[in-house]
Length: 303
Image (cartoon, helix red, strand yellow):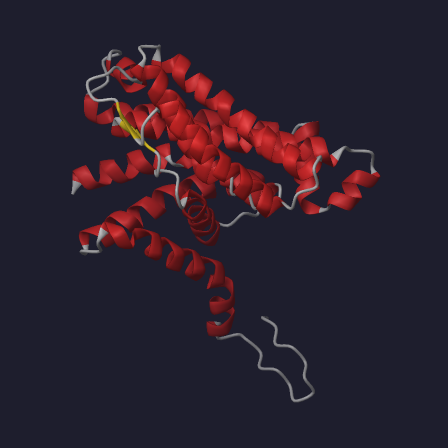
């Protein structure tokens, strides 16, 4: 049981950066960014290829983040400069990244067995092997969570948040919303690529299909965290997102132990997203304080 809990915590932390990236686009920027499915694999592919060729794992991770930034900028360019709809811009970038990732890896799967990764360097500091991933994951999540929280309170961060809330209003104040969207998408996909690179080094391989359905996983984690912890403040929302990533992995681990085949995980994730997104309506329907509609047609409200 302890091994399962450690595995849940490891995966929840490493995938937490990806969930934070989905939160930035989905909640902050109000942009349905399908690029995530491709940029997650992009980060894994770049890091794995660099390490496979003998480069330093930290340099490989940094390059993976840079490639995520470029992917986000291109999606932003397609939407803001070429006037392609957000959903279609993300899908086009996702399709392009599939071929690019194959080019980077040179094959559909790239193994990193018996090769040094950033976790090897963490263990060299004297941290036990079983705790190396958790130690690095906790450090990364706390550092990045704090940086994102601080950034979103700066002038440019406030402009990005305002762009997602009311684009016309912030544009009337002289803010270039095209730039805020591109910056937001670049930052979000950098986090997703970082998560992909950490996951590839964690599982000792990069696979061309490891990013498929990642947007659904991110959405499920975001919504689960918001339902449980709420999002009344920015700090609380960021903590909820990271907590949601761990809870999602715990739910998946529990269902797997109940005997669900791995081939059904995507179906289960889709059902979980539907349940999480409809939970406010279900809660309203089941509320004992709900006022029934009057015959005049007045809508029911909670008291």
